[in-house]
Length: 379
Image 1 (cartoon, rainbow, N blue to C red):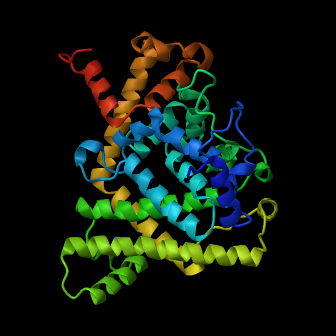
Image 2 (tube, helix red, strand yellow; image 1 turned 30 degrees about the vertical axis):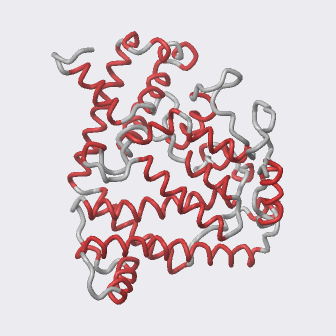
Image 3 (cartoon, rainbow, N blue to C red; image 1 turned 120 degrees about the vertical axis):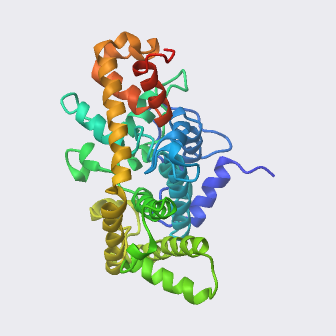
């Protein structure tokens, strides 16, 4: 027996909700291609993303802690995988298209530069008079233009639904919000991303001892989950207690999201994709109480982790490295590899340099910085 694309698509028709996106109904690709015998269009999109250069580079791009701080902190890659897992579990419960959800989740952070938000802020400043830089916009630029894997077309030639799902901030892409193609799959990934990075940044902050459990007293999500763990386990190590508490936070957020979204769909009378487009507001979301608790956790992390002096120092270092490299390249573009330099004729020097630096990993930025600024380092 062989499972084919058509059998997958028959399963979608039988098992997915009426408002879920079916791969058989895709609006297709910019450059038409013959369908694959064994994989659906969204499965092909997912595989193209996984095999892309930009995806591999996520392994050495900062989430909060730079790569050399330790082996067990999240990177952009591990965060991406965790987001995909959470999103896919929620999609399954809501009878949405798991393949499309996984695809969008795996691609959602491809546009991030090195050193986490430091890279975003540095490139924003450097490009403010030259078209700007925003990682979500750059993500589309990567999959539509910069990836160079196929002789027939630029980029990855992903389906319309995947590309639309990557437009997290519609104000950067549409003059009118009503022009946006909306899907529950994309809405789901946006919130799964928040669940992943808030809970796992909390985990990394505790692991790094930049946060402690005492500071978390009064944070509703933490308190509620901790009480449950302490009641269930009379004797437990500190390490297990923290890990289980964070897992329960993820479970509580995910369960509330599923239940509230199902209720929202029923209340709004959503039965088709057309109904969703007409509604004009998000359907996937938390209950009012959970939204408040989630926002409380986000504010706590912003004040106590992202503004911690050690994180601020890491951010500052990353920005200085990026700005120094940008200036060196701009003064003498001939120092760039020929294949990079060739793009300056079409894009201009600033955009060409921005693309190059945004694609670099933390490690490659540090190596390049040493080559330029340490006198005895080989160039």
